[in-house]
Length: 330
Image (tube, rainbow, N blue to C red):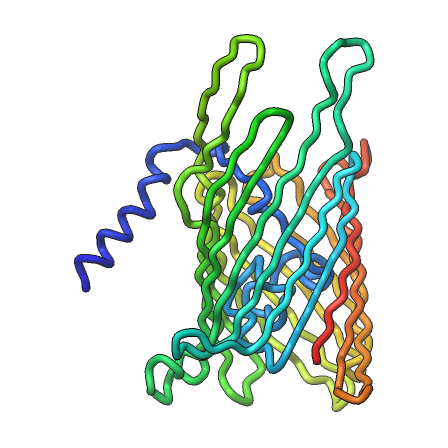
């Protein structure tokens, strides 16, 4: 068993040594969705407790009690739009019980055309489809010390097309969240986008040949912690900190603050910065509203809005992201 683990460890490390920094492919793997995590500056590795956290830590769906569905829409600069959707519920497959989820991210931009040339317009889209499984570690290993640990994994299929160039690959995520009973803190860790290089098929219509180009996936390790302060029975504040080790580009630090009022109104702020000052930092703020109704089953719906500003070119050419997301639990 030990030899197998060592072998797998070195297999995962191979892409790190083959490629140099800044040459990653499958950029949609860097896409982050969800109104709550974006408003918190992406400091969501440990705070993830619903479907919006799949892109940060797959173990988040271990907290899904019955059924949960979410969707989000992002407006970006230059007409870039991103749509995300996910669904989760308890599952039992081959005597394996836990929580299962399916999710997708679809991203596109307007066609690129040159009115002064004879070239055809170039279209672009990329899509990510993922299946996720998570559960409490105690289910697999009957030890009371493991009841506070939740683990999860995702398998993802990615496809990208720009003009006549097409690429696709698979990737895996792994994560866990440590949440002691009756405590005010959480710890989380996740390893994202582990897989073989992203191969792009490039067709040259004039020369009639086809070439393959490979780039490593944007593998990253996320470590986070959060702490909640109960001000009174109706008000709670939470602060979250994340460190993101990106293996092929600059690493990141993120901090987010959330204040809930009677568990209905949520006010959020976040800041995300790279260790490389040439990369843009982001400042974000958002608001969420949660309402519970019984019709005839209990349904909790949460609506989140967030606005993010890229700080480095704030005074020159403002670049921002707006996102709107909904979460339903039933």
